[in-house]
Image (cartoon, rainbow, N blue to C red):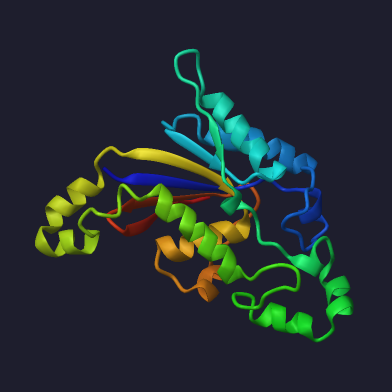
Amino acid sequence: MFVKLILIRHPETEANAKRLIYGRKESEYTEKGRASVATVVEQLSQVDIHMIYSSPLKRALDLAKAIAESHSSDSRKIEVNVDERLQEMHFGIFENKTNEQARELYGDGFDHFLHDFANFVVPEGESLSQVRDRAVDFLKELLASELPEEPFEEMVKRDPIKAIERWDEEGKTVVIVAHSLVIRGALSWLLNIPLNEMWRFEIKPASIVEVSYRGGYGFLSGLR
């Protein structure tokens, strides 16, 4: 059995629209963001969801609850599992500031932040590498039952036809509602892509990223 991971970024917020640097601060949806909740719910309407996980931050949790409600019935209620490890990056002293304000506050050090985003630890905050580490910790725990299975690459070497057939077998679907950098960190591990290459993926607010995972191997199966 494989796991299909559906990684969803929260809808657009006022802070997004104002192009603020923010991670742990809360921000309400814009009108566009509110409308995209219904759009995401509709896009998932035909998906058989087994579990939903969410960041505790309101902009993600509200969407996760809407998805759970739309997939719940009298006979089957889907709960939202909140996990602290899915919170957005903590931007420390840069929180709720524009790039110009952050540069004025931190001087040339802000350029180090921009040029070494993966490793630069924001004062009173964290680095993207640290975000990736906690996202990976969450995923390993979630996928623990899948890890002991024979790696997909080995299955292909031994019997490529059977490997492809097994890849297409029915599996469980897990929805994870989180944030841009958490999703990028997760994809870096799932797809074995260096963290500094994750900017090649455009993950807009309310984006849906699908990854099929089996036996230690992740495969990007959808991005919208």
